[in-house]
Structure formats: C-alpha cells, structure tokens
Image (cartoon, rainbow, N blue to C red; front, side):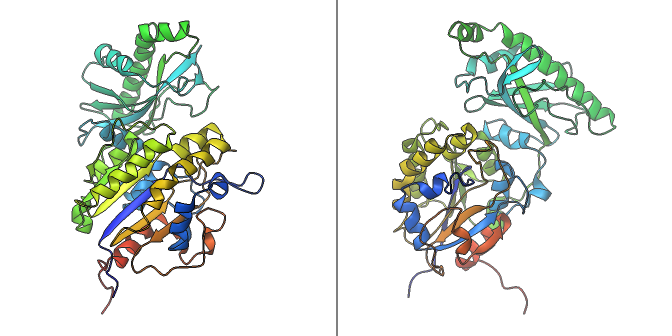
Length: 408
C-alpha cells in the first residue's frame, strides 16, 4: 500500500498568474515540462487567494495560504516587512513598508528610483540623521529599492494614511490621521517630519550626487505605506504540530513566516532578481530542508517583477528557466507538493489583479484529474475546481491524515 505523505512543500510563484495576451499567457505559452508533469500527475484547480474579486497583496495571500485568516490577523504590511528585514518588532510598535523613490518638485517621478539596488549608505544616513523627539526611529533597507521603518514610543497609532501615492506622476502625499485621536494625529505629524527630513538627508547624499552624474535617477525620498501594529498570531508549530520554514528573497514574505513562528532559511545573497538559476536554488534548498522540517514554504519572485514591468517575454522565459527545479520534485517520497501563485500580475495591467490563480497538488493520496498542463486558462477544469487560499492547509492536512473528524 502506498505510504501517506508526511511533509508539505508549498511553492508560490509570486505574481505568476496573468491575463491572456493574444489568447495566451506567459505561463500557458512557456515550455515547462516539469511543471506540466506535476499538473498531469496531480489534482488542479483555480484559486482566489483571499476572496472573489479581491485584489490581494502578497502579504495577505501568504497569510491565507498558511491558514491565517487575513481579515483577522492582518494589521498592515509594515510589521511583516520590518520583521523580514531583521527588525525585532514589538507590541506597540508602528511599522511601515518603504520605497526609495525619485521625487521632483513634490511629484513622484519614479516610485522605485530606477530600481536602485545598493541603498546601504542611504539607509545608514537616514538612521543617523533623521530624529523625532520622544520617538525611536528604526530604519533598515530590504532588497532592492525597498526598506522598512519602525516607530517605537508612547502615544503612537497605526491609524494614518500613506505618503506613497502608489503611482508615478502623482504628488507625494501628506500623512493624515484616519481616526480622531491624539495618538493618530501625533503619529501623522511624526511621519510627515520623517518624510521631510529624509528628503533633506538624501537630496545631497554623495551616492545620489554620483547617480545624477551617471544620469541615473536619484533615490532622494522615501515613500511610506502599509502602517500597522504588530499582530498577535498563533505559532505555526502550535497550530499544526509541524515544524515550518520559509525560503524567500522578499523581506515581506520572510516577515510573514517569522511572525507565524517559522524558521527563515537563506540561500546565498537571496537577491530577488529575475534569474531562474537564482530562484532554482531556493527549490534545491527546500528539498534539503524537508529533511529537518515538516513544512517548507518557498516564494519564487521573478515572474512578479516581469509582470510589473509589463514584459510578457521575460515572464515566459522566467518560467522556462525555473522548470528544471520542478522536474526535481516529481519523485519526492512522502511529500505533498503544492504549486500555486499568490496573485495575478498581468503584463497588460502591471499591477496586482483579482484574477484567480492556478493551483496543483501532487503527491500520495491525490485524486489525479484530467488536467495535463499547469496554467491559469485550464486549471479550472481540475478536480479542485474553485477554492480559496484558506482552503489549502485543511486540504493538505487531510491528505497527511492530520485533520480531526468533525462530528460523531
């Protein structure tokens, strides 16, 4: 009798799902025999990671996929981003996700400052020179143009707006209180002071002076968004009696794992990039980690970057470069392999959309359906039909024979 699976490998193709362009998508048109073989030997479906018609962020999507209801535990993106870059967030902190950006005459010219990469010196300058009396300011760079900010002190509130306009060509926003409380109004003032001071610190920073000489966009401002307090979440091991690990390059996903009590495993420099070779190393690390962990979450980032860039060919090529990693999963013993996406990032839209994403579950006990290829155009024909992100862990645990019976 075939053995029951006792481990779970969850691979999330960040932003991997798309909308048709001339009748096809990057995922559907890619030559990916390994991923298609997983679909051919598994059970497939289409999934709304949060809910039908909801455009999900990667944070709430991953929470749902891990079985944590985002409507209950999500307080904002900031705490997850901050935890992910190594800040020891505490109850009472207010945390933000930040981007280094290019601002001209109060207008955001580029929200990613030309996708700047090396921001260590800029982050150090902000940490050293930006001060607000009575508030501890903890600022740390993440990958690429990203960073995180934590405010610590008395009388702070996450009930405030972003300074990020969320699109290029719009004015840098003033932070405002969203609640009529002294704490919210005080925090909005703190944020506006930090935003103004940061522009002064970064404007004439030697790194930006040099970038201008090279005709590169200067990272002369920081955009703040996703303010949130630190959520109190059940520990992953206590929730599932499984030792969990997360492998990701994005600080946000690392933070989600950390706040769920999962171990973060690194691979080299963990650069996001678009390199299939770099991302394949994550899968190799995950396979090794299954020797010491019961559950491993892997976030694969490259497709999302290509989607945001509106580059169909690059997104397709990324899947093809990644495919050897999927071929190595076909013969794992007693491992339930789940491959899906956290959201759609269509190349025609260049932003997250609510389009459902494909999902396949491959391994012992799975009822194999008739779907032979992995893509968003045919996955709905599979035996999983249409499900939500919060359904994934109960389905997986049942296949591991870890779910308790409901009723007599």
